[in-house]
Length: 455
Image (cartoon, rainbow, N blue to C red; front, side, top):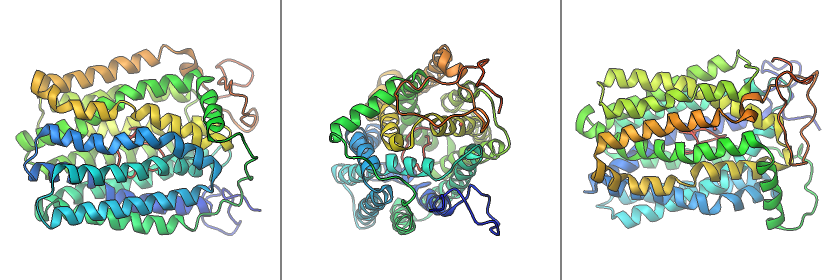
């Protein structure tokens, strides 16, 4: 059977842009358009109903808690069942929960517990969707052009997020957050329909295993056997937590008090999205030899948005900071996906992705829930400066790990297929195999509106 990464000779598409890749990209664009304003809409739905920063944090925690609880199960199912079926089922749940949230906001005065229940259902769908989606994307491309394929995918997704965030912020200001949530529900419906046409015939049938626990242990060995992998996951456990608190709780508060409300905050988020498009465009041409060394150096500016909000700087300066950090964080995002594609066996993609997401999101519910009390105790400015400092310190700490600095891009001449031994030592710079040649505010295969790994 023809590989999904291959295309007919007469096709105008690049050889790596096969049918699955094209469907995945189109679906990601649709969901990014819908979800670009959904997080802003959720926060302002709480504020408009009389809530404060603590309530906004509780709503964000209600979404991320099911992610932490169900991600590993989702990863195991993503490697056991046809991945496209898992993705479609998750999209259906997301569509229904967001539609109910929209109706609740549009028809009256929603209570916090009602919004939290519906948001938790959306987070549950995300827990099953994300590992299957990332595994499907990683398996849809092959060869040395994988990094370029991931860059184009992320560029399309992030580009759609620009319009989604900007239009979402404007719609909230004009007609309220309920209609933005309704658009997000419709986007999930369209994307789920596209994903139903994905072809998994190229993926070899899984051999019978020892059950879900055995699958999870196998995935755990893959992660713990690779220092570059578990060290970055630990880093993002804290980085995503503090960035999530700043974006979901502190950002709307600064926007309300100093920037003019939802519209300017949506513009700032759109600028970050525009930066990620620029970064992805750079990565369609640039193939850094030291994948994670390059990526880690580009993560230091991720501390700048929190610092800019702490000052706070004028809107024009904040937009510039968000754009700059978006460019550089996308360099890490593409480098991270390329490293996973290069080093992880295909039959373990979803399980490794699940552990990656779990580690990256484990502290997010606690951080968003505590964001309000922290702001009340120390003040908004001090809380934001603390976020910025943690991002910079942890990025520097991970750079001390040799496996992170030395993981090297392999070419067709010297790369061997990834094996499932669990040792997973990266190719060391200077070794015979080292020949010069890529995690979600973002990032992952499809953010679906979650805070997620910003890479």
